[in-house]
Image 1 (cartoon, rainbow, N blue to C red):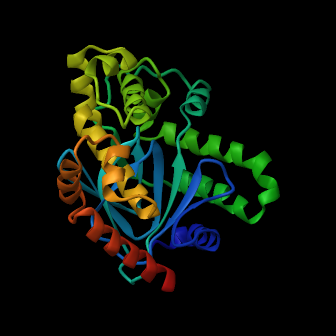
Image 2: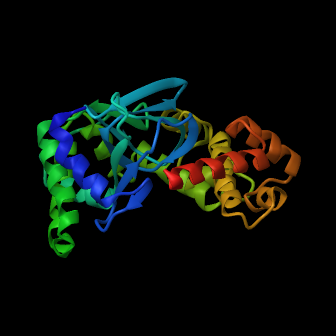
Image 3: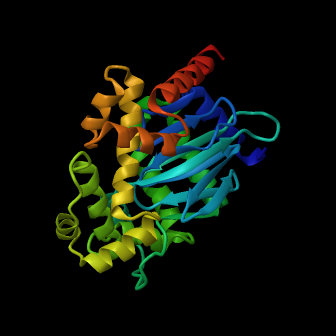
Length: 299
């Protein structure tokens, strides 16, 4: 357990609950796990993740990345990945803080810093780097505002800007600056990802996607695979299956209805791909997932 994060953990556990808590501070979320989880699909948004306790495995490009409280993770765009959280060695629960990135704010902060030429396009949409003392101190000031909510409107924006400033100074400053550049390759792929998300229940038309991104078919495919680890069609399929799982968990529709709602033309194809993605057909997966949620609530 990392002693220099004790105050951060106390604040997170005081204001967070099991699962994901959207805090009163804009863009800031707390994630608390009850026990080591199984590997499962998850959607990483464009964000920074700071682990305060425990560790997490993330799979991208067939690589397994593990990071813990000594590191932080940068996700440059919305990424459907596979992840697994782990408790700390002493059995204490996984605790993490996520800051969802605002490209406009990133660009504003970057504009106050010395000009830097970033010619090369990032080769991956995700990166892990060592945590630093300045980042820890700034993160603590931001979290401490949860104890004085009346101060959040005035002080949280300043603390967030300082945190982004520290991150821009770090090893992934180049990746973050690319997020803030809408006409760069990363910015164009972000637009492609947004188009897929907005049109997720319709047949993917590569020509329309190229128009949305402002890229040729070859360039779109090359950069999309490099940054997300998936082709556009694979990406859409991942999003559809994750949306379907959420709709099934709500319990208001049958598996067949959900399949058509997320864009599948065949219920049997949906069931096959759901089984391949989540390890069980829809009904059995829902039974297992609801049982897990019930155990967490009792615990």
